[in-house]
Amino acid sequence: MSDSVVIVTGGSRGIGASVCRKLVALGHTILVNYAGNKTAAEAVVSGIVDDGGKAISIQADVGNEADNLALFHAADEEGQLVGLVNNAGVVDMSQRVDEMTYDRLSRMFSINLIGSFICAREAVKRMSTKHGGRGGTIVNIGSAGSKLGSPGQYVDYAASKGAIDTMTVSLALEVAEENIRVNAVRPGIIDTEIHASGGAPDRVAQLQSKLPMKRAGTADEVADAVLWLMSDQSSYTTGAILDVSGGRAILP
Image: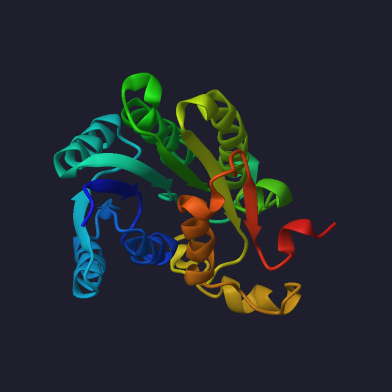
């Protein structure tokens, strides 16, 4: 097993868990980050180990800078960081903007945006050839909502993911000469637990007949796109935003 390490934030469930399992194929040690569900994170780790890979779970709230620093220090103990998947994110109850509180907005942007920036900052410090690293890859998980806007539901979530699009392109250009590639995957309606956490457990069932492919996507379908962007097969790809939305993100 290589001494190379990849951090997956929000790796205990949904898309993050699928990404962790897929990345084992690249031979890295996987740091499965979780905010509060240790049982779910340990289940992901056990599955990876059973398949012959190496993984550990690390608790950290990506909306908290001290937790993020501890997460990256834990990675340093395992080997050389070569990859980061900025996957952790939250939604909230459907609301109009004129109903949103400061606390809701603060939580949304602290986790979905500021946390991704802090994690990217720490990853660049370790991977950049400018800082003595050997290079690496960052993949940000965005959302089709950044193009669709989610009016009347999750404008704050959509805005946070729109900022992730901008961050992806800008950071990719900033570190292109330092052997770091930065890309994003922009999922559409994916059948995961995130809908229930936003108070809409039936959202997939309600929307799938309106989707171009008449079905929701799966976490594994998103993870396959992440795997490609993390692999050497995408060695000349940086600043790309790959839609995995079943066509939903291109609707007029």
